[in-house]
Length: 163
Image (cartoon, rainbow, N blue to C red; front, top):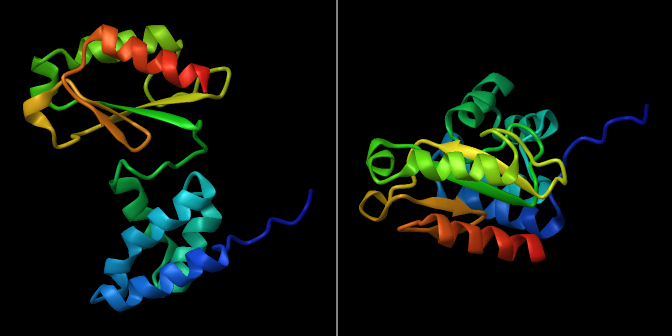
């Protein structure tokens, strides 16, 4: 096969990364924002992204991998252009979170953690979206959708499917 190109940030993201070092007190503190920057470019945190971040911060790959596996906002495999995060905390649960999740699984034909056959949606579970007073909540890409109903959810999915 072709040699794997080591991961590199684009020049403007590289500048942004340099800036992170001036804003955070320790290299370890830079780890999360740097991973987000890489994921933004790469779509997910691949092994070469982990390698890049570890090298850049002088941390072990195991340390970086630990951060990646701890935070649910990092994708550990490639994801679709539309990621739907379902909040599964108790307060959302009490307000119908499970019904929302089951509806999404049926509608998209996948279980949480999977990507649809057409490659357009990835359904993920998240521990808490910190919007407990307005549940049930899903996050679609970077947008929060609160006080969800099945109708609202269907309208949202319809809109995204038309894109």
